[in-house]
Image (tube, rainbow, N blue to C red; front, top):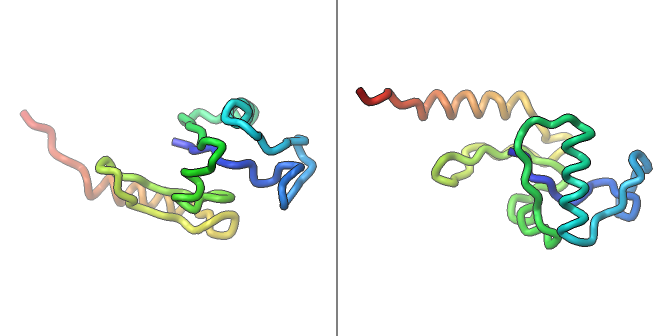
Length: 110
């Protein structure tokens, strides 16, 4: 699942970029609209949720500008990647997922 957080490079942010002419949303409604736009334009097929405008999730997980986490079925952090862009490691994340699945497999009950 993807958690959409604050825009990293909005035109009105401290690290602006001009691609997309994106302004930082100022309400939950605007952030939801931006998340939908992002999902559509990038043709994302994974489920996405949106951090509220107070950025509570981004702050709790130190997610800005991007970070990969694996949360197990008990709600514990099974993998925490480094902050992006330099610590963003999709291959390491995939290995962590595979390792986690291998250690949590159960045999079906008859």
